[in-house]
Length: 78
Image 1 (tube, one colour):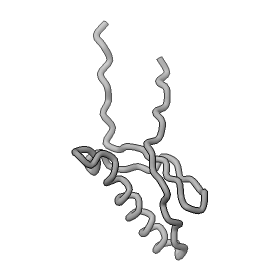
Image 2 (cartoon, rainbow, N blue to C red):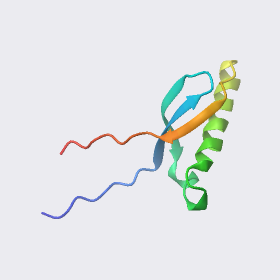
Image 3 (tube, helix red, strand yellow):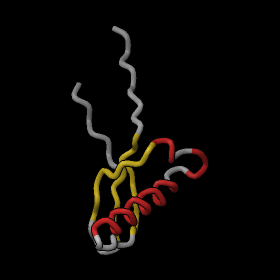
């Protein structure tokens, strides 16, 4: 049987930890925003822009982002 092909996702999921201790899981960042020499650094700016839009729409500003990290991959059901 031929090996299974890996499916490349168009988004990368990140977990965000805010300064007030809250956490937001699986925040999606387009794959095209990442990579190169900057690695995951552009994801912080992308998520901060999303948070700003959310804060404007809801009328409540989002807390400051402390850290971001890639969400762990879910184990496959093989």
